Length: 114
Length: 112
Image (cartoon, rainbow over the protein chains, first blue to last red):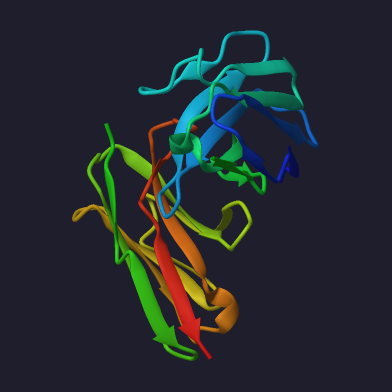
């Protein structure tokens, strides 16, 4: 199993600003995943963050809007840049068990953009 | 790519009743089907899963069934309790992929 801590847990932001979300895992992992969960919606993968290489972004998500850092095997950050109200969502950090396929999630960062 | 459909979107039951949530998938190569429970203000957490070589799996009050021919799988919760109230997501993994395709979620409300 893995324990994942995310910060901040929630924030209210002004349009046009940027916010960085931090994700700390209690064990070393190769891949970390960032998901977006819009109100009442399912989980949408934004990108996969690999240590030592550029993140891999899913269709519809770009690095300029969602830059990701992965400085080591236990930590990652996701920045939501130039925010608009449409970016109001829960952002979730996740890691996977390479043997079972199970995903472990942080508690999420709930962003509200005014 | 894989497509996962989940029904119903909302399910309201009385405490003690059973609840069933159904999912269908499109890719016959999918072989791992987890179910996640998301309580309010928390991240999703795995509650049960099933692999393509098994037809049914039980864990106390919850069970999952898989029909590979029809490409559907279901979550069954018996003797529901108020603490079962949450959003439930089904998912499907294709081959060796670490990245699942999620269903849209079912909001289960158990009335005391």
